[in-house]
Picture 1 (cartoon, one colour):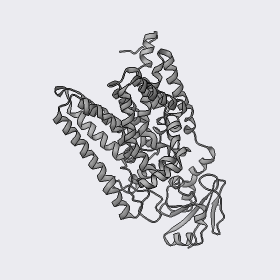
Picture 2 (picture 1 turned 135 degrees about the vertical axis):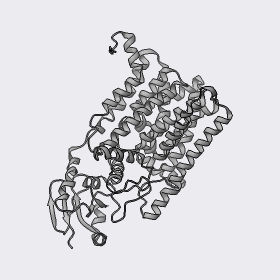
Picture 3 (picture 1 turned 90 degrees about the vertical axis):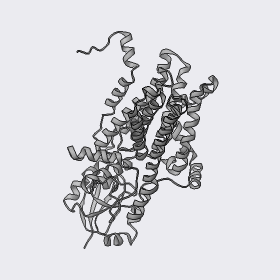
Picture 4 (picture 1 turned 60 degrees about the vertical axis):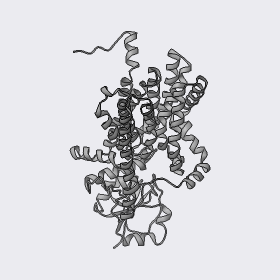
Length: 479
């Protein structure tokens, strides 16, 4: 059988209205630079955290219950964190092909692409074809455009939950005789794994409510499905409520942020309210997309479009705990908005419906274009940052792989990841304290790397110098 690309207008219209075409196109576009090191400006530290845990599964201990980082000094590095599913998938691929950090990028991109597809299919059940397509395109070009190819669990987690919601909605929506048990089991599996991977994705469960309230499943079947969701919740609570604190207490390392107190968070949110608002009007859909999100709210209220208004209300209520728990981190880090973007995308898509035909398509195109142009920088790495890529091979000339290292990168673990060592990351001010080097030497410190151009600035040390170049200087701790 041969495939002929359609040449007539109707055939082309069919292709361009098929979400699978756009998912494939944007998948290919985001393969650009997929193998580059995680040195982008936006959240390279978060990516290297994920990557070092994956590498430690391969090189130290493959037990998924004991994730390890490299910046814990003389400690084991075991710490409580999100359930390391993405990290472990990287490890499993590495068993077959050898370790490469970009496996995480590719895995996330694949899973996130399926997430967009199931998001589209879910919307098709409740809205018209145009809203489903436009919302999916807007979401592809939202903050998801860049973050779906990062070594981070945010769009990965959200996509797993969306897939589970789609399956659960199918299970709940069909008459009893046509219900497929594998959909209910799939919903339980994907939702559980998604929530374990990143807890804020729980706000996406609001998309299950139409099936629970209006689906054709019997009351007993709805009770059974709700019981499965309760079991999922207990598993997630077991990880975050018991296991994570246990690891932090037992191994003395509370490295990952697990939320702040409500009072502290509210103070931080009020203090940094401009940054909080920026997450919605800039980071999520960019300015043009946010404008149509607001227009969508106005249109839905004017037209009394209850399904749209209920989605906004319930989605907002579900997202508020994420904002409150995030507090200062929500204000500072753009990826916290990711679980709310699907709701915003639907409203923005609805906002484009005030025009018809090609005019509506033009509006969506402008939203997507702005989103892409404002994120294209994330596909490149600054030349000044590339110097640390040689850090591992330079250290290999002077230090054993097990020697503990100190780097002046402040809170950033990125240089330690590229050094392929374990040790400490401290600021220049901390390193220059008289007792710092003495104390760390007693804990096994062997070498110090002083970065000059990126992640740190040059400071002089009265220690034997092993090598120096334009990017960093390596010092040896005298015995």
